[in-house]
Image 1: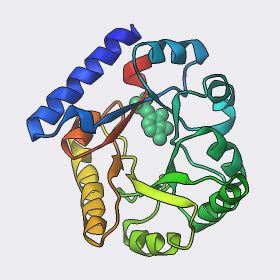
Image 2: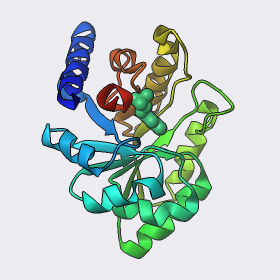
Image 3: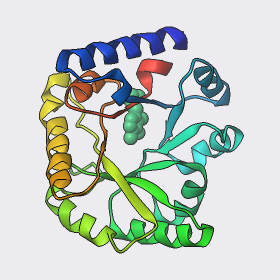
Image 4: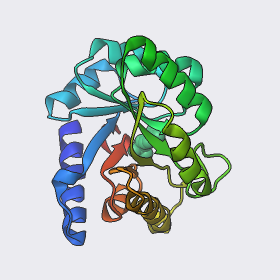
Length: 220
Ligand SMILES: *Cc1c(COP(=O)(O)O)cnc(C)c1O
């Protein structure tokens, strides 16, 4: 069943990139495995999926320890006291959203002599329930991050509001892309756009997503 779901998702992604003249090679599927166990992750990896996402350090611990060779993405809200666990198991943190977390990551990365790849999470929709930096604060935040030599910002991430009609979230994805492009003009390399989940990944891909984070469409 996962095989079938995977095929369907990949087909949707190729159709979406075709519609807007992008290449499927520029969109990475991140399988979000927070609701499934190790065997299912193995099965998905066996199908050729290389990248996996988890949003809670503790719940994911056994999975990331058991399958260290997979590319793990940390996609959830990250508490500073978990920074150390996360940098030792995850290749990319999608949820950098405050200086206190940057400080914690920098400190841990110095100890372990690592470079930490991150995306800055932006709260484009302005929903109060969502984590992430306000778009107006992005430029200042990026300036501050220049002082953290162990932290490398690879791009931006957002979570769209949950709506019945996926088309309603298009402006949200478009805005994240425009933010990325505005900062690229200022000479920053923010290539990655992590946006789109089961309900809205097709629209996210049309709007330029380079990473989609998909759980239910693969595993339910
Ligand atoms: C759970 C989760 C996803 C995947 O959600 P689905 O709707 O199941 O595809 C993506 N991103 C984040 C941050 C999540 O927590």
